[in-house]
Each structure stands twice: as structure tokens, then as C-alpha cells.
Image 1 (cartoon, helix red, strand yellow):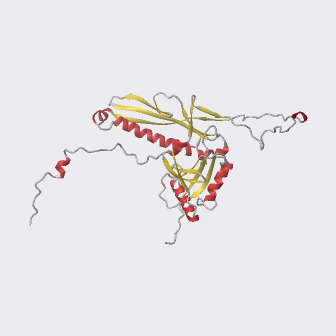
Image 2 (image 1 turned 90 degrees about the vertical axis):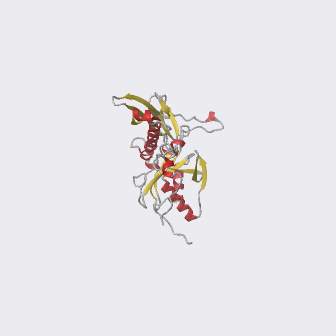
Image 3 (image 1 turned 30 degrees about the horizontal axis):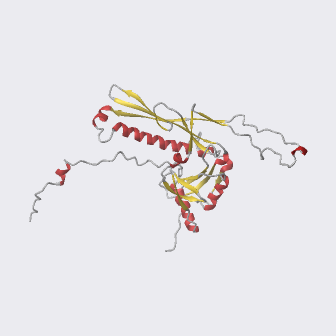
Length: 314
């Protein structure tokens, strides 16, 4: 028996008259970038930051401590400075965005095509900035940790004892741990196994676990086996402990003050013109660096294994 035809407007036809609610472009590789939120930044006027360190001995200057200073000789001396202090120069991260003016003229409702293109490019630059703060061969935190501030895991996987050891290296008011999400998960497994689950804390708009009161901040810029998103079941990474702030002689980010066409901290967007084919061009530049003011402001736990799991009785 033949099915009776539906005597009503069909969905396919109605679709042609319907308004479609659309989202702005969704960039799945973007991250919260907690490091650049939590790191203290200092603006520079000339793009150079010199860290003048004192030549420190094993003990500070001898000073007089006596009830009767007239009967003893007051110690004399001075504090010497490094002869060749390190200078940090801002690094430029740049990209050029091209937009066909015909496209931006005709297809900019409800979303402005130029604004969306520039917005995605800016987010990409900021992702690169956070990666460079950690991984740059020049000023990256991994490369600039002193040898005395590097420790190895006891057995490979990150245990509470390992993080306690990191704290002994950055014990003067540490600000936060920094770790890949898989390293954080591996540490949580070790805590669960020992019956000492870490507490949680809320900072910078996010909820994080904390160890000894110090938040553990996630970032995928601390790679696993050299990859941001490793698919392997196991792998090795690093965990950092950071003290931030110039007043604390910690780690600080650097940026250029007063850029022309500044859009945000250290970021400028310049219109480069329109060529004969109607292509509008924009130059985006982000100037950044980072400085470690004292060796004990940064420590690294190396060769952290992230692939260890446990079976628990049901």
C-alpha cells in the first residue's frame, strides 16, 4: 500500500527561509594561557632590560653586633657587582594577515571578516608568546634554569616527594608550579595512591589543584617527548616551580611600552595598505621576553614520566 503524501510544508523547503544562528570562528588550539596571566610583566622603553646582579659570596657582609661599639672595630667592605651583567632584548613575533576587500565588503555581516581574522591572528601570537617564555633557546625558562636548580624524579613518575624537593629549591615565597596536564594527572594518581589528595584553589578565573598551598598551573607548552599533544601512552616532560615578581627577585615577563597602533600589552597591528588586486594587508607584531632575576626564582623537575597507571581493587 503506497504511503500517503504529507500535505504540509516540508522541512527542506522551510530551511530556505530560515535565519541561521552562527558562531564566531572557533579556534580549537587556543588555551587559557594561565602563565601569561600569572606572570608579572614589566614594560620597557628601549627594548633592553639589564639584570644587575651582586657578586655574592657564601656569607653576607660582616656587620657589627655589640652593646659597646666603641670597644671593637667596625667591619669594613663593599658589595661588588657583576662586571658583565646580562641584558635581555625583546624578541619580535610577527605575522602578516591578508584579506580580500571584496570579501570583507560583501561578507561582513553578522561578523566583521577583518576583525575576526585579526582576532584569530592575535590569539595565535599570544599562544606563541607563552610557548617562547617556556621554550625559547634565548630566554625560555627551561633553558635558563641554573644547573643547581635542576633535579631528577626519584623513580620517573612525579611523586609528592619530588614536588617537595622542588620547593626546597624555590623556598622564598614560591608562586606556582607549571606542568603539562598529563603531568598533573600523573601527580594526582600518585597522591590518590598514597591517600593524600591535593586540595583545590581558585585563582585567575580558574580552579587548580595545589600542593603545600602552591597552585599547579596547567599548560601544554611544557611538551611531552617534545610534542605539545603527544598521542603516546607514556612519555616524559618537565615540571617547573616559579617565583614571579620584580620586588621578589623572581621571574618576570618583558614587553615594549607605547607601541604605535598598540592593541594590547606589547602587541601592535599596522595596516600595510591595499594592493592592485584589492588585497588589504595587516602586520601584527608582539614584542616579548622574560628574565630570571635570581637563580632561586626557578627550579625544574626533569624527566617526569606521565604514563604510569594503577589497578585498584573494586
